[in-house]
Length: 117
Image (tube, rainbow, N blue to C red; front, side, top):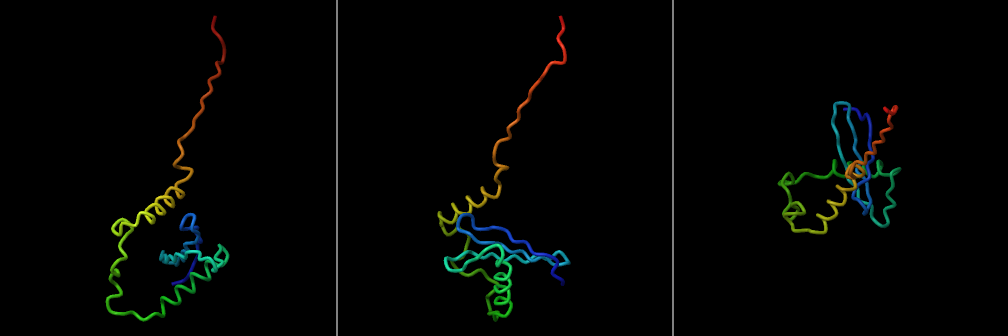
C-alpha cells in the first residue's frame, strides 16, 4: 500500500481538534481524531505528524485478548445518557451542514417587454 494523500479536517466543534485521514492507493482510508488539549498546541500544520505518532503507538501496542470487544461503559452518548455529549454532537453536525441548513432565498423580477394598448 502506498500513501497517496492526507486530509486534515476540523473536528469537535468549538472544542477544537482535527480528523486526519490517510488515503492509500487502493482506496484505503485510516482516520485519526485528535482533540486539542490546553498545552498541546495542535494546529492544521502539525496535526498530520501528531496523527502519525498516534498510529505508531497503536501499531506497536500489544493486542490483548478481548481487545476487539467494546469496553464496558463506552457505548454511545445516548445509551450512556450523556446529554452534554449529545448536545456537542448535534452542534457539530449542524456546523457541518451550514449554510445548507439556511432556507433558500429566491428573488424574481419581471420586466414587461412592451405595453399593449
